Image (cartoon, rainbow, N blue to C red; front, side, top):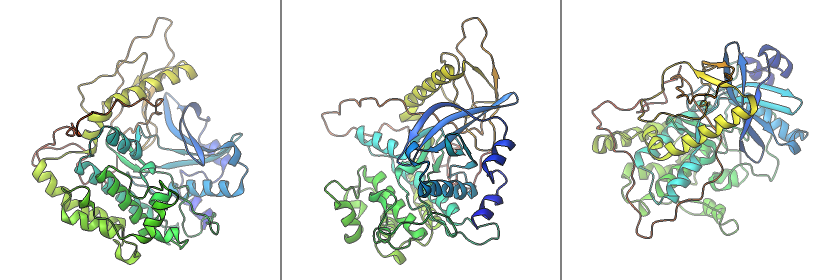
Length: 445
């Protein structure tokens, strides 16, 4: 089954040698952009004729490359994620191995983790707008459902379970796109790695009770984890944090599902009921699928949009993280010049209207890959000093950039929490942003 899974997708390399040969020159490293317990993610590119192709390359840590279990988990992640084709899931399009060990190539998403977005909202002492939180979780639910429904080449369901759904494994693009990532501990029928007896894998504060009891989870475990994530976005605080020993773990196993209205009174009854069902200890009491969660969020969102106007994830990111986006792009430009000395010329229109332009020293390079190589031509710099350029990215591109060094937060306001300065919602009857619901049914081209 595992070999059949790999062969089922033409753009997933059946072997390292064949994959590298078919894809031409190797990718050039630009910068490390993320680091986790299992591996490191690098920004890299390679030339393909007159264009350059940008991607994120994930590798195992040096000390794990020779460990059979971690290598097996790593290759399982690549094979399984490579089978999922959905706009709310980060795409894996190549598997390989070189002198630095095995790697997988992924779409490069310009943005931040949901954990970072939520942490910034808490630091600023402002709750995330309810519409934004619901739209994010609705997209996550759509991506999870696509993963849960994946079948093998013979049409047999693989019963894939992510098993590590948390804000750290959800990416929010600066363009408002939401994507599930990191299937490193996912399990499916026929995958190589097996959970060792007595070993828990995943973020403890988001694991379902059955996972903590070392029982075999199904897709409803991911629904529980998504419920924890949604509760935290609405409340602005951790729900099951292990602050004193395993306090959070004990509460997951023993406490009744919390009522979100005790901490946020403006939550509609229908949403509060959905959250209680998602967080119930009894697995049969939860929504049967992530798609059901997405469907039940839709009428709640429609009521909010009618009453308040439409507020999209893109609006929220543009309002609160525009400066972070510019810092990322400037840092990426600097790293690219250090590594290659190249200047970049854009091709295509801007992805969205904005009052800002990006005059950087040279050019902005943060081009992603949703459907193939982004159209960016490469030219050698002229002997004369470079002229600042405003870069515009093709509409189908998805961008990602490395995080800058942590910036000390501003001192909190001494008074009560200030009202959220989020952009004013658009009238529900008017023309809304491209990320208005339903977004998960549209695939970018």
